[in-house]
Length: 368
Image (cartoon, rainbow, N blue to C red; front, top):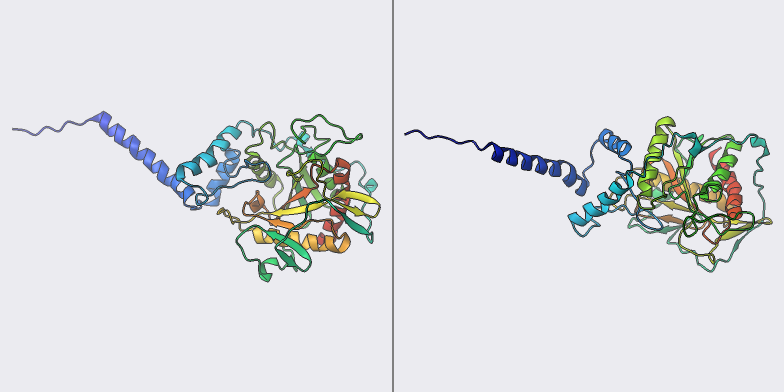
């Protein structure tokens, strides 16, 4: 009698398919959930190929970078992390190299009026107290992380950064201000407009013009990242910045210019400098407290402290306390990367544009 072995081809194919699926899960999904980092070349390829894959935003104020630890389950983590990315891929197709999204030097930078110094300054009461947890040489910091801010972390005697090149962009490009007779616009949402002449992008133009007139190399990108979809805006702006860094390598100073989102027309943080009322500013600095790799966060914080210390010297009250948070906000991309909030919804575009000449004066004093 002979033993005959019958080979079930369909069964083998089925088992091979299952093995492949398990391998994909182990190789890609499990390391993601376990915070195991792949080599930089693979993550960069994914980030550049699929806009929004690395980081996204889904709240009305700041990005929420949900780590596996913060999720209640692996399924919730995957849903929170992947679904907004999938929905944003089609929207994240604006080419940052398109010259229509970039601002260039004004025809005559000599005509740009620089801020004076030795002016009397006075913070205008807004009705909202500025709270903080740390005071380092007069610079107030609201620490929302679990880190203990030691003198070693906060010390900023020197800045080991490229000081000549500055990048400005807007994760929330459509943020706008209280309309005035001179600056009335059509809203695309509550305190939002797609008209770049009336949004925070116009404030970025003022900052760019000022810095160019001081002699800095400035790239100002005005790509929409929060329109037509708000969700995923940080993922899209990350793709923009990474693309810009390919053509402008070595840029350390990367400013994400915003407008404070939580407010109504009654909240207008302002400071009077000389005879001019301008919008107050606020640094928002990210960290690795959310579980994502961010080797630059302490350097970014030092940069903000250095700038704010100079602002306190020249224009006391120009800045509100620095806000240090767990999320990265794409600031892992530079050694002097930051969010700067310019005023709030109660401020006007005029006040916010005017504050840029004082910010530029401060930056020039720090960087020159």
